[in-house]
Image 1: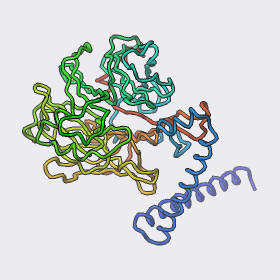
Image 2: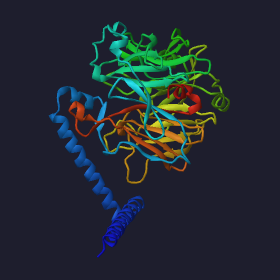
Image 3: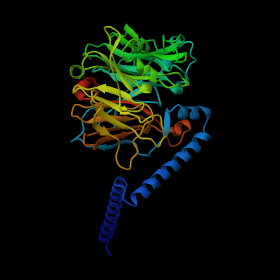
Image 4: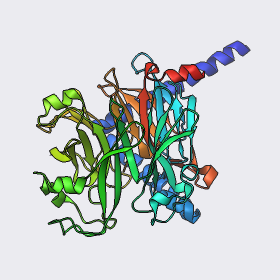
Length: 453
């Protein structure tokens, strides 16, 4: 037999085996989805394998050092779900072209990716470099640097960046806000317990969340044990000066929605609201949802499954709604009058589920939902978010999976990226750091990238 013929046979055999494998995978997915035997059995087998994988990871964590165990306990590092890294899917025809900014729990910085997953720019600055004495956090004990991260970053067209610092393992955990230039030089700092996310209005004003421990009971809300974590909304000028501060507890207590405070569950850390997102309201959402006005602030309250709107001119809560979610994050008011939100699915174990939904605030009716692909777990116990892109697609950050995906409204994944960062370097094999936040920018929004090439 000639060498050419042998090579052809090998190639055809490989293609035949690959085709059988693909058909088997498709058949298995369809059987599971439509609950046709042996679909349910296959689903149970996958669940059992996942449980075994979790058991092995728990054994790894048990053998690790105390710091590594704490990183896992705090949720900063998670069991990897795959060894795949980088861009796994990229459909330039259907995806929204641009650059994706992300922050990760493995260090104190941010990275900007091109569509192929290459890092085109990065920023690095540690808490200790900016605040050597950490005076604004006293009397809370200092946080180990490995428990500090950039929780969120907002990027300006010239490469300046806002960095929200969080340090887990202490209460309260908000650690500060800094603005850096494209070379990571500090331009200004806001020395308060800023946490989670910030948003920037068209006029340059910055909305942020802060919190502090409150010792005194809140009026007739004495059932909320003190000291408690009190959430505040802050407006800053473009150069980082405080323009206004409002207590969410006091604003809710003085509003027609005071009853929402009675929904707070007893918690050991007494973080009864857990505000996690603040967004400036666009004109389209305001016109569809009176009495909301453009420039008001929408806040997500995880512990009461609520979104509320605060008016900066008066400090009043003017609108609030329960949302069809459990422990949600990142409620975003849309110009079409709807809200899109990451429904974490509650504080469940790793066999839970999450979804992203767009719903009508007035009726609560879900108009769009993404909850993963058949046969693939879509779940993040905490954090995560989404962004509606100009072409209508949705960029989703699945934090606990170390994953970002762009999906069409039909649910097709047209771009997928998984974190390349792994735990072997810190003594946590088969672990990944959570992705804190991901944001897509068009090339036109970031002219500095072309300037630095």
